[in-house]
Image (tube, rainbow, N blue to C red; front, side, top):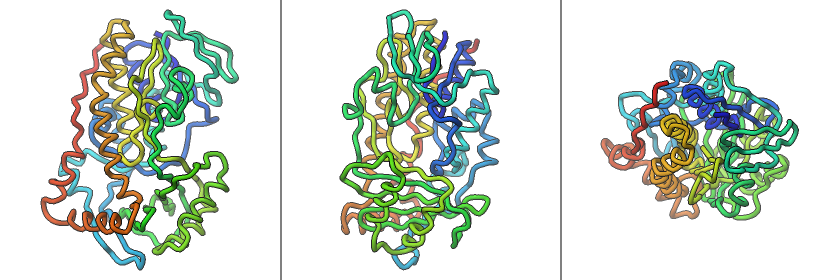
Length: 392
């Protein structure tokens, strides 16, 4: 089948890889003029790690990623409040790595070895599903027909709006905005340590990356309109919300204008009764974005793409059957991930002084033997078994 995949981030190239394995002909179309750079450092583990392993890209992820030694929470004066060791949470098998989202995306796309058609600087303008094929009109390119269309175009999915309805039907804003930016030459540096500082209304995380780059992640409470167009407005919002904050916040905000990459968005979830309609399906954040509060969005996107491709491969060309199995297999699992993410919101941006004290108390408890495993162990083991991929 000819399959159009809209979006060339994480979900799209993963889906293209497995569709190629099944003998289909995927075309990737990406609105950006080049494959995206930037984005935040992600902790990559669980069933998504298993998908990457089956794709043969784990050695590359290990070379380009980081094995963090510590996540350290500090107060306004920089004094240590608590410390967590990732190895104590993940266990001894080391099936995890911290990696920049863009580096993960590049590794996935590289695994395609140029076998999938890639169209940059374009996206879909209209979709017409006549039951036998989907007629696609592009913003710039010539119209084309496809057997299936998959929207893997993220939280603000164009495909979802065109086929399923406006964003407000499905987007659940969590009253938090996130900004991630990379600053060269920032001091101090703490190698392989995620430095975290929270006050009422926000959390800041600082991580030292290679080449003397520091990544900053800000999660900030905001219950008003989210400025999604102007970088100047976005940075002004951050300065306003973080005015008077302690620790290194003034220095981080001062460094923000010289950042080499700058990302800003609403922290939202996508909740839909169905991810498919006719010959169109959604995958990744377009279908069931858990928000960064889940800490696992990229891995979940890979899981979704793998399962969708596996079901198409074993359905004998019956896309309706494959789509139904895709939904049935993943819906309970992804709903549980979204629920877990909502419960963690207060850790990323405490609403009140009592919430901040509770967050810090829990982090202190996590240092005690066995408490980490009791409190979080199950959260770091995906309750899903990946289906075997049918052989050609």
